[in-house]
Length: 137
Picture 1: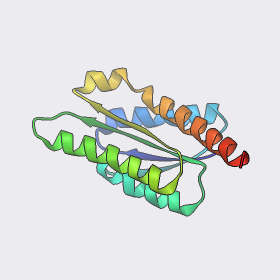
Picture 2: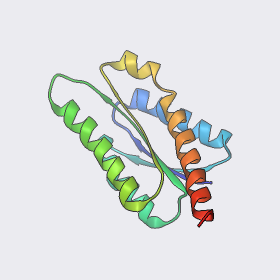
Picture 3: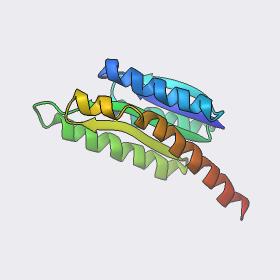
Picture 4: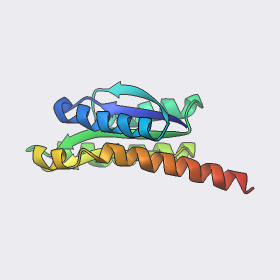
């Protein structure tokens, strides 16, 4: 299983833990994981698109962390990064799991750091499903 992970560095103290758990889960599942680092959540979709177009991956994972601030920017980043991830998945037909956390505060993010590992499990499961569906044709 060839897995690509795009990881945002914004809110790095917690985002790096999210990535570590995703990488550990990939290793546990026997997937070969390649990581691409981007500045923030809004940059994740384009990196996913580049990876999807490369043909090198069976599935992709997006991990990052958006914590609500005092402005509308939280909604923009949360909504547009999620929309971008979904657009790339639908356009490419490649399984892409969205592990971008959107939380009210750091405590909520800390409590959800296992979502990186969960996203890896989802991506691997969907890649296997895609393979199974394609075999039945």
